[in-house]
Length: 459
Image (tube, rainbow, N blue to C red; front, side, top):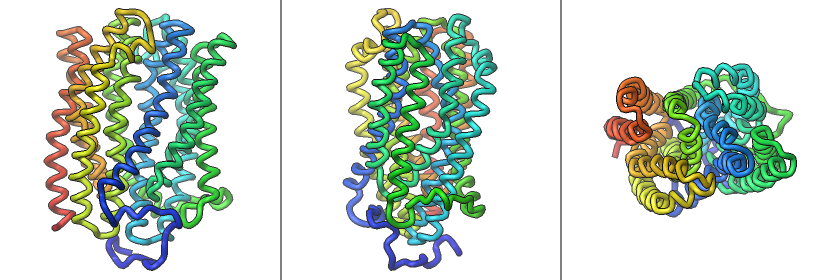
């Protein structure tokens, strides 16, 4: 059936609690959708932030550097497959907008199977390459054993991470961002408690916080699975009926693979930057890892609106509401920019106190605060790049932001690490590559959005 042909069963509801994103006011629905997403991502990051803070306070700075320094490695593998969940989100959302419950149901079951396959692959591959990756990154000798141990345990829990992300994508496509937040909150509370017990009571270090994180992910994913099994309508999951629908799988891959590659591009460039950070010593590693766990919360504000655009544009484009697609992008971009500005300013003003949550060493606090300030000043550029990438993916044009990211983000960062950073071998010069790469990519993605919008969304 053609994409914009008459919807099947157009007179039927596709889910008793589905939020129709194709009608009504835009701003309130955007905020109701985005704020739970924002809080969900922040809670998810608390898993790693708690790991870093606990080992930094109660273990050693080597353990702290290992846990924080692994962030880019974890992102490299996990984000690639998590990017595929964007494809699931778009395919399900488009079929919801087009009132095609049969196709949407196939996408739900295919997404669940794909999540399990991806999770098992990461668990096996991650354990095999943990050692070589740590050596390739040039992690200092005193930190390397901790890094390998954390990675192997973390990747062993990858099936639960993938399952949660795809389950959340299914619910998001149906307009529900509240349930994933609740399930993740429960897992997050457990993670904090388990971290403290394993490290303080049982005298564990990176192994303790890694095990706590895996257990927390397991709890969140199982709670979400329980919710999906009790849902009404097409998103209800029956475990005994899971299967891969080949045409739907190809649709998910066509949209999700470029998004996955885009996530990988970011991770590769950040891995390259992390290797440069490692060359500056354990203190800089520890400071940078702590700073990352502060600045990432501002990125989650941006990304929440990006994911909102993926779903809103997907549903409205599937419903043929082209003018509403334009309005959604324009209003969401404005709200995202305002939210990001406010949160960035608050972060800059409180950065020293926030760094103090991770360490009481003044030198590490100052280095980390420098990183946070540099990145906060550039986040408004990231709003344009990231949000318009989400809008393009909602239209099914996932390859455009992937290519722009490869050239503008990955190209700029890697080029600088191997050229300018070698001449100006300072932490400041290294961190400046983030706002510069965002600026280059924002300009290009804005041009591509305008061209695509004019072609696909006639007024």
